Image (cartoon, rainbow, N blue to C red; front, top):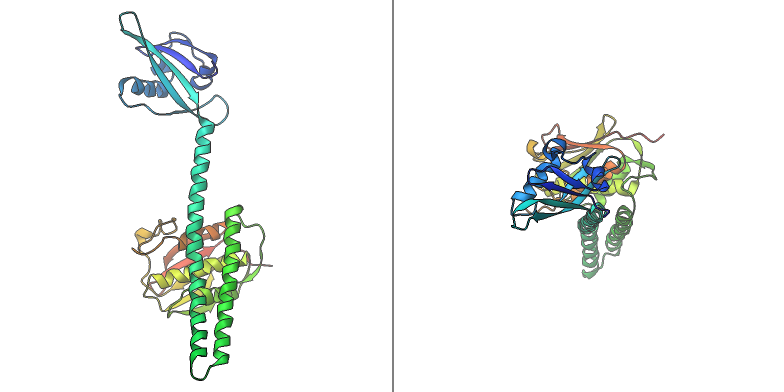
Length: 319
């Protein structure tokens, strides 16, 4: 038998064992009391014997190598009078199976999150394109068609469509590749933030860009981060101005809105977390992933105006 196996009496004293058992339980000897020799396994075994419910999997580290997981089978041994004399315990190694299950679960979670992110991040440019297309249509339906206005609106709509194409490529890259960004280019934070403002849902808010810094970044993904930060400010209301400004070793995105609850700061970047009943809890989680992928750090706090402040640090200037 290749599976670890051990036979014990009712007092959990070892009667017999095979070589495989020594790899997970240690250097066993006959007549050894398991409660003293291996109290962790003994406690698990005592539960398996006395409880009606299965004791569940047993996890332990081998003499060498990583932690292993076992699916134990405990069989009662009785004499001719049906009196219990002991137990046979066979430990079937299911480590590889558990690893495959975890990988499948993680893959399913990534696919679900990917679908949510696609839906969330494409909604902004899609809505913007729709608005500009309607504006072009209105300009052409008047008694005197305004060709210049219609052309300008269609140009804006085309920009939004290009942004959607770019986002699709970015999101596919995120799904297929490592979350770490390897290829960067010189990116003007001022230009990137301004471009993000054009495609984000910003309502009646105004943008104040007070930064003159060029950094090494993935431009498309950094713009995606800005778009989500701007949308977050708009979604939570009370904001009239969003400011992109200098910060120590980086930059900050601030607003003059209602601010962030201290209790929310730790959970703010968790996928699916939102203080808004209608919120998706996706935007800031996407921002965090993008910042992490660049090797930077992000912290949430309060701006000088009492609103929200997202400070990104560890950002190296492009030289």
